[in-house]
Image 1 (cartoon, rainbow, N blue to C red):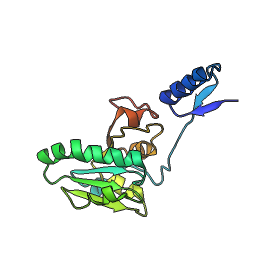
Image 2: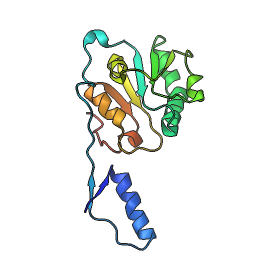
Image 3: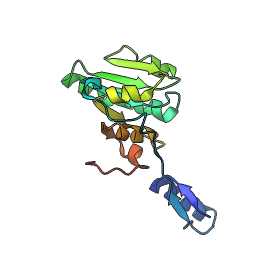
Image 4: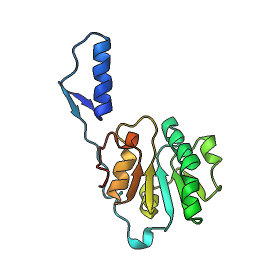
Length: 168
């Protein structure tokens, strides 16, 4: 008789709904653990890492991922390219929306679409990003990045479900 939730924002939202419906606040919640296949997502060998490669990995039909990528391309990518003109940004994920496909080939951006093994490109990255602006929860991409022992830059929304410390 437990309620499995992803993170503190979910607990707060459910408690708010309990109050709104004049019900007792839940007190029987637990956080649900997520994991990943560490045979597929493993640290890169030095020869696999491409200097200056930044990656975002996720379903590119999912509106919060689309929004995160566009925010990154508009607000962060120009700053990176100003410092590192040869840097590349890989947007890896199935079913890229038309607005994502339009980014392919512009300003060092590569849109892959579906790939046979997402771990290969994650391992090739120097830095992995997850600039989610909404729909935080448990971000499997962060677990995959961590399993690959990557440097990660993520928004607090993206980190909500994992709760990784800032300096981890």
